[in-house]
Image (cartoon, rainbow, N blue to C red; front, side, top):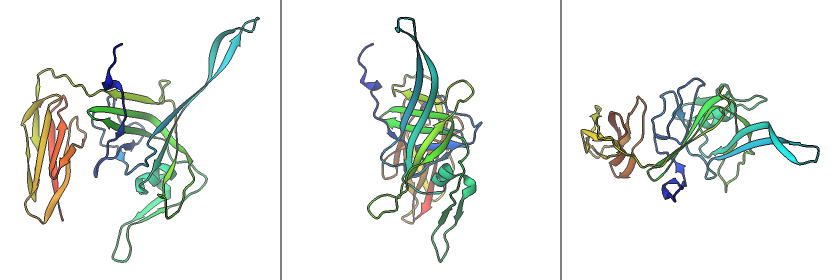
Length: 277
């Protein structure tokens, strides 16, 4: 094995105004098998997660078998478990439903007399088991942690203080997915090799602005640039997405109205919306 800095990872969350690093879907939803593919449309995505990030603890307990001379002969696995620790910095409907269950969460839209109201009822019950995906990046590299069956079983102390975030976090307990596995780590070192096949890039319809894409087709690994321009100062760029494999992915913002993404090994459609200022 040679030294390879591409395989030294320092992952940060993949997140933006439209994409969250933590995604959750009902059990039975198709799960990603790679670190780069778009997630199934059934996944809902989080807001901000606290600076503590994601921590995975894998527990193995064993019993030692010894012979007559008290020498160790072998170890038998007697217990296995996998827990993830994370905290939601953004307290919203997504975070509340993950921690306490959707039946205990209600949201009332903002009105002329009050802002949006989030109500959480807390009692002696657990939230449902769901599928979880955590998406991260390190330059061109991508990292994913996939939990096919996970449940928030513990809630950390919740502080209401003027000098600290009102963070809600806890422990995500994982369960066997039916194959004897409960957690999957997926790494992509970012070194993409093209087979020379060009894939089509289609522009979606839009209004209140226009956008250009740097190519009408491209080979895998090629950098594609999107430049979006509102029709007037009354509008701004809203969401910018591209849709490989039927899912939705977020390009990287490079500047005012400028975005890039790396061409996947499939055709994509680029969509841009413009919102009123």
